[in-house]
Length: 200
Image 1 (cartoon, rainbow, N blue to C red):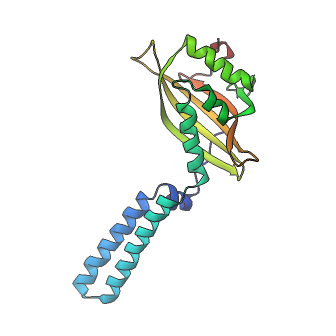
Image 2 (image 1 turned 135 degrees about the vertical axis):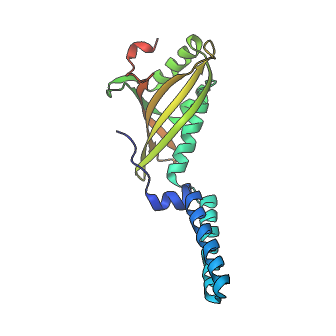
Image 3 (image 1 turned 180 degrees about the vertical axis):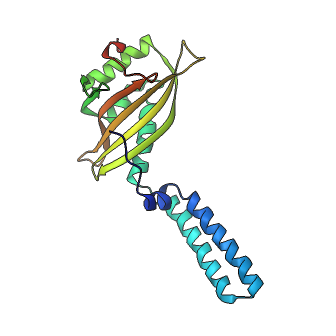
């Protein structure tokens, strides 16, 4: 279960406008060059219209935040709450009945057990830093999203190397309007399937 690519048009308009802006800028420049060579007022007006369209795209991306972007921002905050571990912030983003699943979907931990186990792990394997290598979110509907997360974790006693892991997060919008994680699936560790025994 991996997130599907985002819808192309909303992605270009609101989330990643640079490719579209570059194309519109190139079209504007081309039209202006041709208009001057032909002394065409009509082409100059068309070039002006295309440049306005490029500006509109920039403004849309600046002022419109998609739900995918909201989830990606929340995912970054969730990761930040683990290094150093901030149990209060973490619990605020986890549903009270959130589940920690293994790579095959088997239930490992539930609810408060997750943050309690993370607290115990922080003593055994203190985290120096977390780096998000990639994040991809798919909106399943208006109230549910899944996020694929590729992490690089540096442990305090192992600062010269990183631990690569991948995860799948399920986010659900609650009655209060806030998004919370309802399940965390640990997919890979060092490119292999992790086992429950990795959690002391």
